[in-house]
Length: 194
Image (cartoon, rainbow, N blue to C red):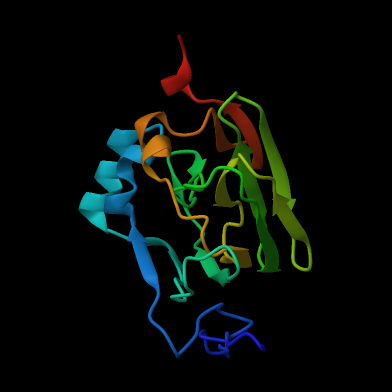
């Protein structure tokens, strides 16, 4: 007996310059939704009062949440900083902790910051044409270190992986990516001190 395919094939057109697709709307994260994720919360709130900028946007393509399917989309993180900390995505673990994810950099520069529950952390650089594999058990966050260009990545992960944003919302990542002498460096997050 031949198995029946119950999920239709999907073709999605993405603009290689903007990372956007006219076929679906993006999910948007403005600075007001991210203010407490930055070390300098007061600077973030002051910036929101002036202009609640769009920090990043990404696609949820609506792929079934089953282990046999692959969720995918693009993520666009815009250039900017709160104080000296670069704009970033909120970051997440997967609800199914033992699932990995792959990101392919289409445009821009930055880093993928990763950490596991035991405290190991890694940062992998994004440059156009480079892929970053996020190992299972690692939370991950994209960081845009360009002053002028969006960081655009294509991502794919197992459909059943899910997202756990709540764990990161409590204290953030153990490391922050900040500008020092015109260059990005990683420093300890004071929220993790003590």
